[in-house]
Image (cartoon, rainbow, N blue to C red; front, side, top):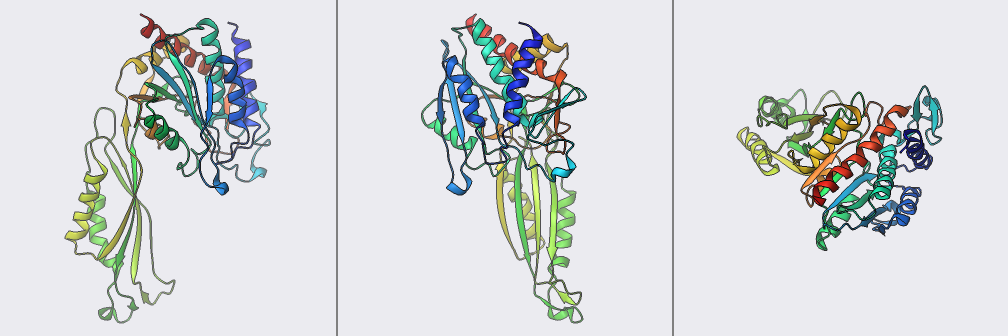
Length: 390
């Protein structure tokens, strides 16, 4: 198939998606546009909207069954982060614009070009394979950049409940670094945050014996926590990290010992640790130091890992076939909806275009990255389908 033609199809759909101002959680009609493209291909499109009227989230589960009973789901999000000051953009963020061999617009890299490439890749694959062994699905949401409470997690629970979970999943997050194909994510670290309130006794700073300074109480425990080696990581993950993001105390007056001190912190943890083990080790330090405290935990996501298997091999081969690159497997970076999908799907990876401009002013994707992205998705389908047909 002509590269210029297929690149044009992908780019045109990406431009249509970018033109919709889908700032989280507003889908702005993106999912309707994708469903309209999938319906003629034989997909059954099911909307699973969720959340209150003030924060309504749109979710789409679209599936086309194959003859093998095995399904690959393309997953992603239509919502984008806010643009920031429009005066800092060189062109309107929701008017797709070409400059210097790049496509500019909010969501160009994260991740509307990926969504367009997935749809066109599936169109091409089904044209050549009208009755494939591999089933194909789309799991899409407008709540990935926001709280992520009514998006992918809701669809995953529904699919698990009715026994309709996919066996493979590609999340279209922008994972590449220099060029499309140089890196995929085969896992992500977990994230767990804590809010620690160390209690003291407020008083006049000139009479410290009549008060109890919680900042002073905290200091030895904080020093010990900073020095802890939580785990050693493994072949796929770096060691677990503990970082303080904020410490605040006091009334604003320079002569008042505060009555409490609040510390916000976060673990980014690998598969060598569990939330329970990290919580226990941290509270052991607080208790050893004799602190009086309250502690609230929020688990944002568990770590997941897809070890090299049929999906990793299929996309590695697809990348090599299309670009000649030997891709790097990585688990670095933040969280994604892969953390939810991995709870119901045994093989989950993330793959998309370069991520240098995501969430930035003048977000863009190079035009030269669009056709390879689509072709890699299509070739991955072909390799998986061939394995199931053998």
